[in-house]
Amino acid sequence: MNKDLYLEFNKKMNEISDNAEKMIGKRFTKLDQMLKKDSGVNVAIKLISSSDQTTGFLDLYKAKRLDLSIEFLVINKRYNSLFEADIILQAQSRLNDWEYSKNMKIE
Image 1 (cartoon, rainbow, N blue to C red):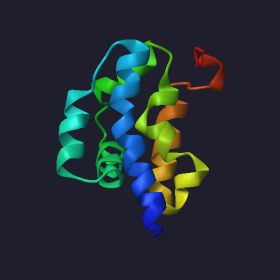
Image 2: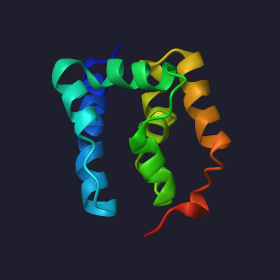
Image 3: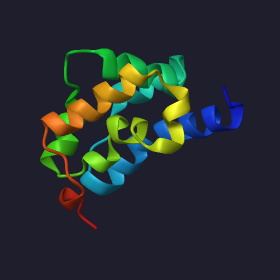
């Protein structure tokens, strides 16, 4: 595993809550708490592997900002080497199930 890429991903995971607060006015405190106890990679795997949808994902969906989601970060080709194929597929599937498309992004 590329350590620099791992650290970069962890930094991006920590920025999700900050970005959500700036863009949609919501802070994901549960995510913040999870990231204090575990790495961003492990937290992403746990949340994507769960069959339950997080309230953060739902908040981002309602705001049409799934581009700020953990799932969107995981499917970024830059980070593919950090995850097993099934995690990437689950993240993509969740975005597809919620009908994510790039035209939903608000600039």
